[in-house]
Length: 162
Image (cartoon, rainbow, N blue to C red):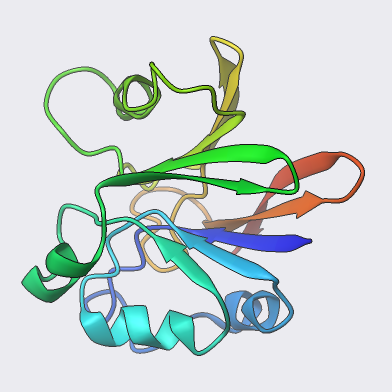
């Protein structure tokens, strides 16, 4: 199973369309997880054209999206429990806010966004993964998103590009 993980697309403010490398991976994915900040309903609908989309709301998403999407959610794929949250809020780091969003849940991985900074690290026995942004790298050298592959075991990796 191939799951494409993306967050913080910020379209159309940060570009007109999804980058080619991301589109290619979306086309052959089994599932898409989006960690919020699509920005508009049109961008959300664009992702849905590629296949099954599971998403949460981000802090800059439109009122339409806010009425459709949850702030956080938990899914299970092939025995792997995945928590998804944008990670925005006040105080603490984005990583700590993401971890606290699921502190009473037994999840294996937490997908989050908000900071646009690619992150992959175990904290308190749970892997925290921020895919970065495919369209708004801010001061970072590369754009990025993630791919989670689940077979007999699972692995998660960042895809970096300019």
